[in-house]
Length: 446
Image (cartoon, rainbow, N blue to C red):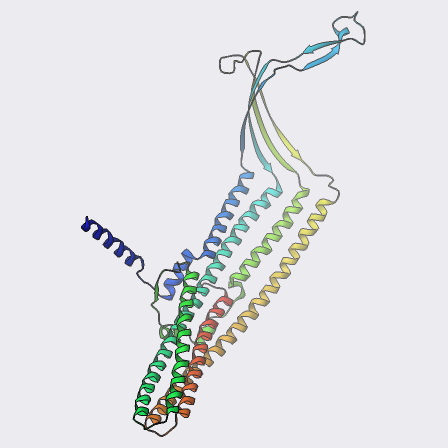
């Protein structure tokens, strides 16, 4: 029994450990995972499927339709009709009526009807509109995928930068703590003042506070990335790509490597589809003045008897007919003209919106390129500044241990180093974000 319990416990433990195994993701892998699991992307894909079903629904309007109908009636009391009694008896008074009952106690009818639309301009336009709507849903899905890729990229960059910030602070904290330890020992030997120890202790405390905040920011950034990917927040992950690797893919020339065409922007493609929908709506309203033609066929069998003999014989009386149905609108009180006028204005409005969006996209791309170039330049400057600040801090630390500078001067050097490190981290994040924003503004999958 103990062996069984041990084995069961072992299996549970192994299963738990396997369930918590860290998953490693490169940026591209994280983006591909998100394209399958991101909540917005899944909803956009459902919209495409709905649009396809809408096309099928609209197509079905023009296809043959066959309906079957069956009715059963049992008259507990047959309706009475009154006719002048003189119809049967010439001598009967004029105000006398004979009571007659027509019909049978049981009536059963089975009917099959087939219809086929032959011509309807509104149907033709409606079918085109449903297909255009499907295209709109597909373009919206494409836009969602572009947005998901860039949102995952930004979250991935944020996580890497948070980790970089944490590593730099750990390095600073380690060296400062070591310096505090050495200074405390020297103080105990009577070679430095207590103020030097207190000054370094204060610096260590401040760095530790920054370190704790950096650890929280890293955890939040990772959870945000998992949310964008559509991954459970409790799932541990590791980022395979490193900042240096991603920076090699980022250069100022990349932003201008290809000539931008507004027609390639997904946002522009979507607004053009919307313009097409408004144009089709105008055509539909114009077809409201055209006639529609449909054909129909009807066959029915009717059983009438004073006995219930639907399933046991009896006489069935057939009735068959076919025909054409023509509808020609003549007067609608001006309603159709008003609706067509509204549709025309909606189309003109859509054309104007398309022009506005074209200008807006061009402006966004220009602004994004400018921000990208500025962020790239600032990053290079801050990277060089961090190198210099670290060099100054190292020299100050060396001078302090040699007794050439005071603890106050060392603290100023360390403060400068921390401030420069914070600016470097911000410039790094701004560079990555401006890269994503530029890609979003371009609105292409590339």
